[in-house]
Length: 36
Image 1 (cartoon, rainbow, N blue to C red):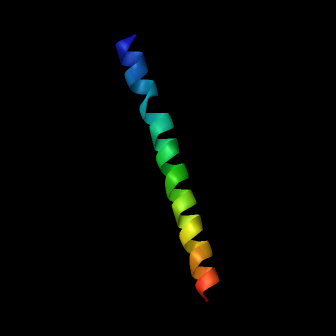
Image 2: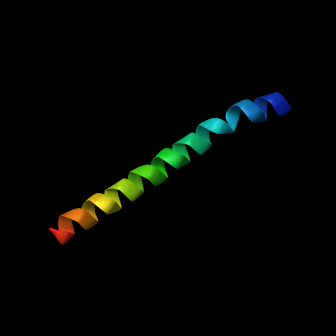
């Protein structure tokens, strides 16, 4: 049980990190477009 949860944990964490990076990049991109 412990090994299973350990293996399953990183994937959602990586997806959340990617989503956060994407949202941050999108907001920065939109902000740059607005400033121009």
